[in-house]
Image (cartoon, rainbow, N blue to C red):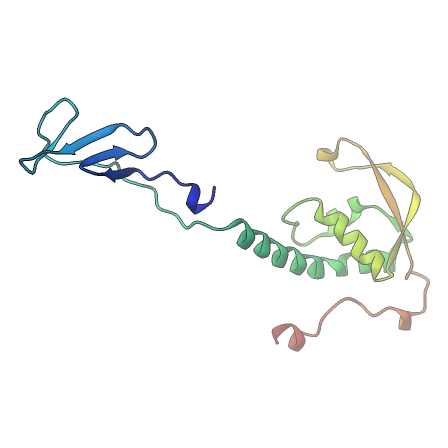
Length: 169
């Protein structure tokens, strides 16, 4: 809900105080300067229940924040795949999940991580799959990935780790 879609608690309409959501008249300012109920009773005041106040975050701001968090997570998690690809000929996303130091904001980011590792030349997909071992996936088939760096000369692939000085800048 955007800030412009919010319904006010009350509105002042002419001499009436109106409930924002229902449009019911709560009180009317009389000629004598006193607020009166729709039944004509003079009021001692108007009470509003305590309101919950919170910051309103736009959808665009939320998307931008998530984009930044996800990009940082991908770079931080990439060494997990690099290490697996250096020590294992074939593996699945299950093995990546087991080794992740921090879990992603959304599970589907592991797929993005696998594609990032593929684009960096660390791994390649095979045409094979096997049942997942993670309980929440209910043994659905998942792709088997093959290392492209395990037996490659070390000089071809630099590890995906930034120097501490570069990260601080």
